[in-house]
Length: 116
Image (cartoon, rainbow, N blue to C red; front, side, top):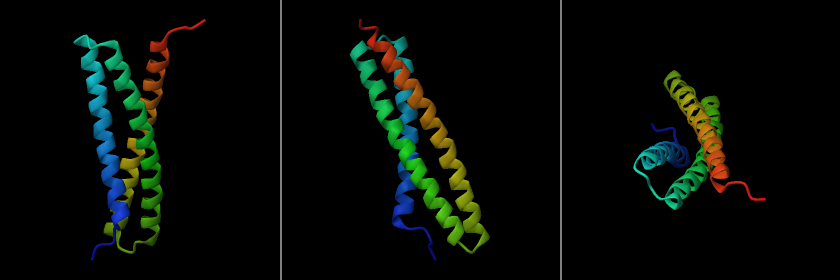
């Protein structure tokens, strides 16, 4: 018997997708610096990264809430261990999203320069 709902599965898959997409954007930015991408392309990568990090944080918080509710309502030890694992994964992904959001916003602000 499956105890996870469609919303629970969709949230987990979305967090996984956004985490991997954020990692790919980070790699594009790093390789773009060495291969001399245009400044406009680098700024676009940074802004998409900030948007992706915001979405990642939002879905991680929703996933943690769903996992806690699933942990409370589950009766078997296997489901409880699975819920705890998902909570830890979402916590790590949320921390990764917060760090990349702060870094991407800082780079975006610094790239705009000082306007007097």
